[in-house]
Image (cartoon, rainbow, N blue to C red; front, side):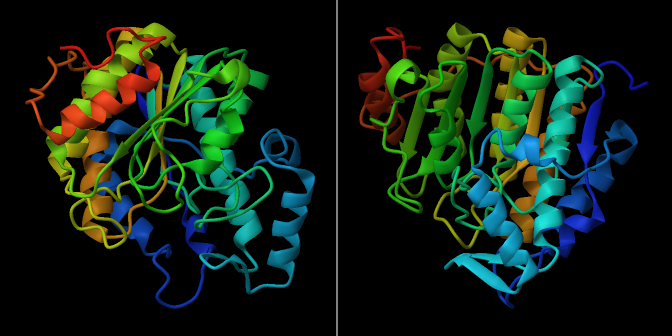
Length: 352
């Protein structure tokens, strides 16, 4: 039996079997940097085995035609499903393992068998739409895990925080009409995939439960921490999730070749600290990180090390006071734009 409050980790050598064209940024070697950081914390982690997600689990998010398309592409590999997204013969099985690993870690945390966790999976998932693979993603790992928690564990309210530098269009579209899942995203904008404007706030019964925080290129640690404190914290405290899932990309790092942000390892540690404190305050600490992007070895190592440093602390840090928001600053402009969209539901959004 796992030690109470223990941190689980999903890591599997088979995740490296998904291989694409030479020079592709989403490459197996990404996991070497992640696993080096995991090794530094190994004595404090509980391993969680990866297993393939079933058709039933995948089809809670994706259409049957999409699953069949990925399977057929793998059978006739190598294939490309869009200009960025490749499939080799092993890709279907590896993508099932990524989704299954995310599901089982999330379920162990939701049930209390583990306190927190990190699923170091690939391929990433947050761009995968219900009927389309895109942006390196085949199946939407976080969305599949969220639906499994609702279907199998009776979890009613889930926060999905997506801090990957690219907007998680697939995750947003999976839940934008659903008030039981709050999707919150920080991302470089305008940038791939072109979605994620502040005005995209959900539809129908889900209006107000999509929270997009588009950021201009060049934002660093202080802006990201400020957004977490002034936007994410009040909205989450009102929503009261039962579990928090983080689509955890490290491509906002200053070294990442596919974006133009300035976040450092210290910034990711600050962000993870805020999220862990928020989880403790709202949902008994139930918090799971699922790997998305990150395409420099330094960003993957520093980001993973930062997250695990926070998760393996004996006690959660307190929520820090909001950082300063000087008049005319990028932070003031960003928070003001988001508050204008959401202030009807959150009158104090952005306040100190």
